[in-house]
Length: 124
Image 1: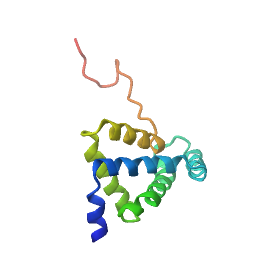
Image 2: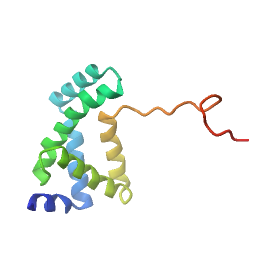
Image 3: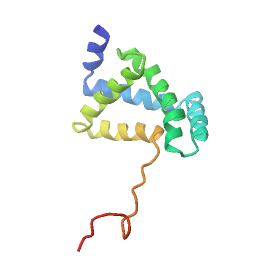
């Protein structure tokens, strides 16, 4: 129980340091290779992204954050993500780093084109 209490008590500066370490871990050659293979297997298919890419991304994050009191499972990664989210509005640097981290394992979201036939609200 003490581990999760410790994890929740990271200051913004500590959270920023852990986030930087997580981002650095994604750049490590062996992790970059694992992510590249998962991306290749996913073939830009959102369902396959979740199947192949997300577990690898989760594992890379777990390997870093477990040293900071987060549980070494998906729940630990979710708690870390919630903690980072809570600091995003207070600290633009954390918000930027969080965006960078998400871009490493989430495909860019493309918005449907605006125009006729999309079911959008017409502006006049």
